[in-house]
Image (cartoon, rainbow, N blue to C red; front, top):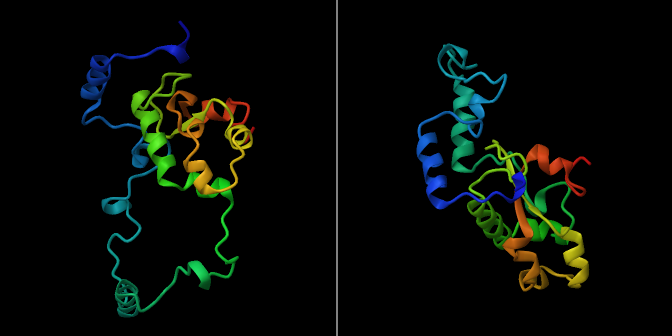
Length: 172
């Protein structure tokens, strides 16, 4: 049996979960290689005080008086509310739901290397663009009604490195 087809039992998954409780994992960014946790003396603001002007700006920003991050129509790059179909689908609730189901089924483990990685991705086995082409999907509503797009049997959990090795993975 290959590494990609191995299925864990629920009991095995629970045992792994119990063993990992309270342990540091690479999921927590403060434990990533080369990262220093910013607490105490290593924090850049340690021993410093904000100026009165800075305190005032922070207070006004919190109240909504100052708007630093401009979004929507007021953003310089606004193009009338257009978002490509791929972006609309990727940002939809249905995609988030599909990804969660894939991750839960695969116990949040990469199905290629079986390593619990800090960053995992749900990968369509049949390419995303082919599903859109084959089902003539032109709108978000078409995508939401397409059963093939949301079939969890067409998804697999991969870590970032393994996903990059796939034919249509990022940076390939």
